[in-house]
Image (cartoon, rainbow, N blue to C red; front, side):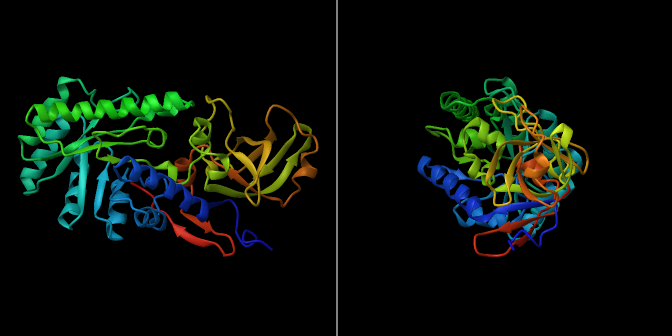
Length: 377
């Protein structure tokens, strides 16, 4: 009888001990580099996880939805950055949070967005704090550090009654690298570009107290964060196979997995069928273009030990197909009999976690704790 025996499948598992080690590692690195850590909690969306990050020394949180902001504020966390460009239709919810005492910060990367926040603030007697999103690597949204638009947005905020809080960026392009030198280069590009943007605002007579950067690969690769005030990273709390391929974590440092059960076989095809399909694992194929493709996840024994060569090769909605990568195992029914419990490591922890309303958090020598997660927008 194991701690897993009473659990239904598929189930999202958190290895508490490994999660705590991941948290301690990131916090120690940010402390050594002299910057505040504001974790991006979209990965877990779970209060016990975030409480562990704050207890370790994190200050404030980053969210990707106003639902997260509302839930975490209700739980007593008030320093919150909503790190998605604010849509005008969401301003009433942002106002409600601020009126309740939440120190909610918003972001934008365009003059129209800046003007909408300012106008709404005037109409409701509220001074919003807004940060300007920068684009340092062409990966997503944001303003290039050298663009004239930066000063236009800065003036639209500062001169129209909004508190210009600073600049922020996310070096998502770092996910394309897998060598220390390339990752260090991405981290320096992120740092230098964002600091340059802050300096341009200050030289134009505009305030810029916060310089915020963030991605797990750059956070763990930066050699200096001079000029930066805070780091935002998220997936480090669990890690995943994409991070493993990038080279910032070992496979045994991945703290999130999906418990699943073998329900059948297609022996002539070398398949074992499990009850974790893409509704459990997500459709994320983030490792497909990396140096090692793990399909939809790495297969592990029930105790979490990886079973080399076996992956979730494909999936239907509720059926996962386990196979040997690069070959056919005609003895797979003997290897994985019906009823066998396995654990699957995910490609993308955020996407896999999002498939579940709760986690079962496990620690050596104790039973499983149920940790709920916040769903919705």
